[in-house]
Every structure is written in structure tokens, then in C-alpha cells.
Image (tube, rainbow, N blue to C red; front, side):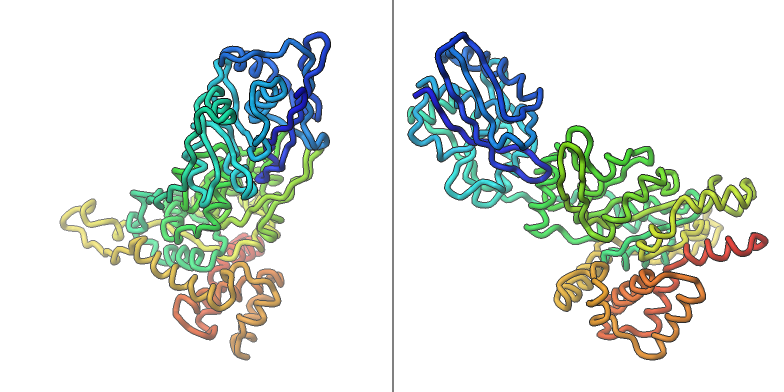
Amino acid sequence: MALAVVYARSAFGIEAPLITIEVHISAGLPAFNLVGLPHRSISEARERVRSAIINSGFTFPAQRITINLSPADLPKHGSRFDLAIAVGVLSASGQINQQHLHHYEFLGELALSGELRHVEGILVAGLALPPDKTLVSSQANRNELSVLPNINALSALHLREVVAHLNNTQALIPITHTPQPAEEYFQGLDFADVMGQAPAKRACLVAAAGGHNLLMYGPPGSGKTMLAQRIATILPALSQQQALENASINSVGGLNVNALWRQRPFRQPHHSASIPALIGGGVRFSPGEISLAHNGVLFLDELPEFTANALEHLRQPLEAKTITLAKAQYNMTLPANFQLIAAMNPSPTGDIYDGRSTYDQNMRYLQKVSGPLLDRIDIQIEVKKVNLNQVNSVSMPSHAPAIIEPEVRSAQLKTQVIGAQRIQLKRQGVLNAHLCPKRINEFCILDTLSEDFLSCAIEELGLTARVYHRVLKVSRTLADLDASDSIELPHIQTALSYRAFDRFVHHYARHEQLL
């Protein structure tokens, strides 16, 4: 038969739309034509497929070969269609039995020798696979596909093995689901490593318990980065559904799916990162840091050093928990439910009290972080320099009095986080940070005294209605950590104290002489 139909899957964001590959062999001068909006990387498949077929011991038809990739209006790129095209050519030329070909989908890059190589995004294709289809791919993709429950897939090392399986001469080995252990990815990091900073540790606990965004500001060396890096150690492991979501993003992004299985993401891009690197996109699509941090932490150190345009691009994802990329080549929506943790110095020289920068320089530096972005950060705390008396006594002279606070370990904080999150999920189905205004009115009810106190504080500081709601959500988390059914005045007061940066900028802008 001169016509063969083979199925594969493209890569479109974290989706894998079905691609029908039609191969027709007709009389005429030898030619190999690819149609259906193929990218140049696919057009190059003609050379890989020809060499792979010949070096595998099969005959490459010396006729006119036309290959259509349908739907034609969907952009396609990469070498992922090599195996499907080769199977189609061999089938159309009568070298493969077509009887059961419609039960399979093929994904794999071909070496010139006919060996099958790894392709990115294979996990997304596995998730999209219908129950009545079997995915055939490279042995190099076997471990990645094995994380999927009830996966119906086969793996091969060489094109010859795929042909032998389709001709019923030698069956391929099925890929079986292998549960992945949730190993401790953050081994060696513990909150006990941070000397002192008890208020900052408490703020980190509150942020983790409610899923709140957190900004820490203070002089260099005060421990802001150490605190941020340890927040992920007190977050619970991902659920099975969350793990599959993150595995899909990691697969498309070219990360090691098995090594990161059920680990809370912790992404720390450099402040020179471009906008596409942060939010995703590019000429050839790649997920950005906000999507790679989905269900985890995005840590932006030296926050004002990021370009203002890049920071403003974070505002919409922080609210919507998704990012919609509208480009000339594609239009897609990606998950971006991340927890923003940011750190910054209060002045361009590091410490605002060192007198090395002027008032105007400090204000320009502080205003690099816009008000709308600050409104979306629930908790803002000052991290002060560590008192030398809080340093571990091992590093202190024997005659020096040491004031050592009890060590607070990540394991202890994690237990509190899990308990508080269990209360929130049972009560409202989501973490407090994700409550919409309607549900805030339902679950964050205040008594008259607390309501009046909060309203006066918001008016005095000139804060927005968005901040009002965020203070309520933080208060609800504080009440949950205390196992309190109602929000009390101390919870409101503590939540307001977590707007330290708002107050700092407010007073600094008004009263230059304070410093």
C-alpha cells in the first residue's frame, strides 16, 4: 500500500496535541517532501530518516515521498517526529505490517545509525495518551515515563526493534510504573543554621503556613538569603496531582523529572534574567521561572536589581496564578502558582544607615519596587544585623557571655506548617493566601474592635484595599497556627507589623531628617 497513517504528538507548552502523519509514496523522480507547517528542525528529518532506514538494514524507497503533518496550521518543531516519519515510510513501502499501526503513537529522535534518542516533553505526551493507544519511544525516555501511573508505553533502543515489534517478530519491553521516592532535595539546609533572627523565622513560618508572599529587607549579611533558601525545607511534599503538574513542566523545560519528583520547586534566577526567562516564551517556547516554580518558591534576591519591566511582569501572575503568553507564533496559558520570596537591601550601598548614599539615591533605589507589586506581597519584614551575642558559643571567646536562643529546626516548623495547612484545606479547600474577596468575608470575620483598629491603621498608612485583604489573610494564618477558630486583635496587630516595608518607605519619604 502506497499510503500510511502514523500518529505522534507535538509539544505545545505543557500540552501535547495529536499529530497525524500521512506518508504517500508515488511514482516519479526521487523526492522527499514535508508539508504541514514544519519547522526547519523537522525539515532536516529527511536526512536523518534516510540514513537511519538504510543503516538499519531496510530499503529507502527511490520514489516520490510526500509527508503531511496534520493539522497543518499547528506549528511543529524538533526532532521528535523522526521515528513516526520513519515508521510511516517503511509502512507505506510495505516493509511494516499496517494492520495494528493505528493502535500506536511514536515519539523519538533518530541517530544516523538508527538508534533512538531522548526527546523533551515525553511526559506530557504520556499524560495525553488515550487508554486505547500505546506510546513507543526511546529507551532514554523510559525512566521519565515510569513515573506515570497506568502508563501504556513501550521503549526501544533501535529502529530495528520497533519494526520487529510491529511485524510481530520480537515484542518490545513494556514500561511499568515505578513509584519514585520523595527524597530530601534540600539536604543540609536547616533553619537551625540561621543564628538568631527569631522574628524573621516566625515570619517565614507564617508565610509557609499560608502560602503568603514574603519580602525581607535589611543590611548585607543579616541572613536574608539563608532564611529564604530554607523556606522550601518546611513546605510539605507535593501531592500526586501536584507532582504530575510539576513533572510536566520540568519535562518540557528539559529538567530531570525523576530527580525532582514530588519536590517543592525552589527557583533562584539571577537579577540579570530577561523577561522571557522569567515568564516564559521566546522564539522557541520554553517555560519561564514562574512556571518552573509552580507549587513552590520563586526567590528573587536583590529585588531592586531586576529591571523594572521584568518585575512588573510578575504582577498579573501573582494574582491569576497563571501566565498567558500571546506571541505571533503561539498563544498559550501556563500554570504559575508560585510563592514569591524576595530579599533586598534598604539602599544601593547596602545599609541605609552607613551614610554612603544620599536621600535621593536611596529613594530612587527603593522606588524601583513599585507600589502595585508591594501590594501583592503579604508579609514585609526587616531583617536586622545579627547581634554577636547570638553567635554560637563555639565561635565566641570562653570569657564572653553568650545569649543563645533555643535552636528552631526545620522539622519542627514543618510540622506546624502541615498542621496549619490541614486546617485551611479542611475549612475552605485552599490556602489562606489564595482566598478570593468573597471567601475572605466568609472566613476572616473580625469583631468590632479589631475591625476599627485595622481600618484606622490602613488609613493612617495610606494602604490600598488589596493590602486590607492581605492583612486579613495573614491574620487568618496566624490564628490557624494558634489553632484559634476566630481572628483576635493580637493576630491583626501582628499581621500589620508584617507591613514593615510599607511603613519604612512611608516615613522615609516624609521625613528625610529621620536618618
